[in-house]
Length: 205
Image (tube, rainbow, N blue to C red; front, side):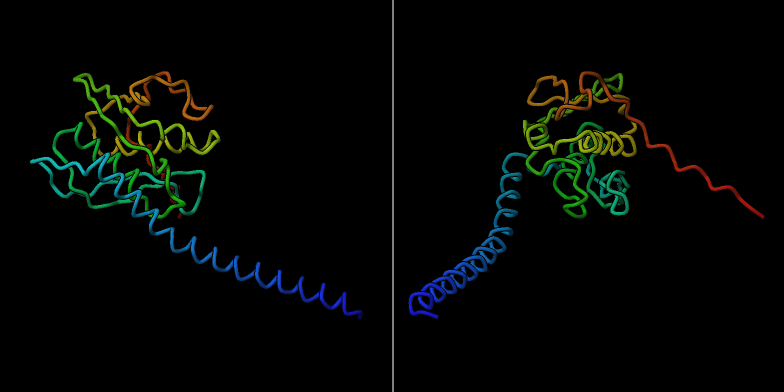
């Protein structure tokens, strides 16, 4: 091997080693930044949508619907202990905020982490309106399944825990939208009712 070739080989090896060290440093930096981003998101949420507390709050078992860990195309109820208001509109706000803020795992999340419930209205006839920030639409993963899971998680959670609500209209920043991300029709009210129980298995003797 000529001296020129030796110099080329040494330079290539040095560049490869430097690249490997830079990659490891970058990976470590990303891992260090992940908790910081989580903390910043929590702080942002506390400023924009502080926890809702009312004089009638009582810690109660509630069922919230997130993506099933066993089947990513389905929802599954998770029982949590929450301080919930006796006022149905405030109770609905508390439940939706919990859906956004505290999924059991990131993979079970149904609503974008940057989304915020701006307001919630409940009429005497049982019709309700949930007004979300733009992130509900802009940060929604593309695909009909993602949109269906998002809407269904809200509807099913309210249906189980707030019986005063019969229908739900979803707005984004005070405006009606055609779809969340190009698929599910958002122009009308959604029926709010408890999910149908699983059919009973036949009894064999």
